[in-house]
Image (cartoon, rainbow, N blue to C red):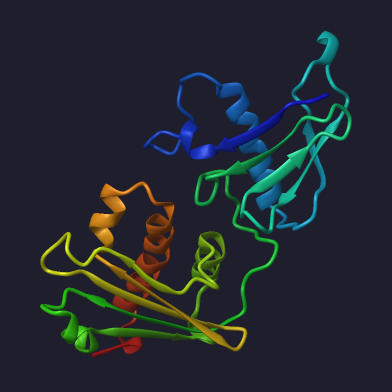
Length: 223
């Protein structure tokens, strides 16, 4: 009977993007190789990879090869060895050097609208600059970020309006599948730094890409 490994790849990666020299490096390297194999092909189903199982039951090398694919519910990568039963889930792999960029199912998004800035009052939010990206203007990098950040289907207001002055206001709307999901985040930067909530990291990743597009292509931006 194999073990079940629940791995967050970020725990093994240093600030330079490489694996750290601390404990578990061989296991971490194995997980990184699984991530590379899955994200090079983008399969949503478990499929055979060329990776040899690393276990040695009875001090003999396991003859099995790893099967792996995306887990649709969690956004993790699921893997197993059909020979010895070793298996696991890998999270925190998105954007790492082992992420080859392929995905099983990217969302079909018709429009992304973003409004953000530092209004003096909440009432002034409507005067903030807006970036509107129609379907043809949405780059694959942004589709991948929305997919990995699991923002489709998320609605509501997040953050704390009282932790910073001036107020930082972010409003992101995603039109997909005939519905619009609008997310409002208050004081994003403070919430990102001072809370351990992964939602703010995921939201920040998507919004940062939209902001870069707005700066690079002024025709998409209006006030």
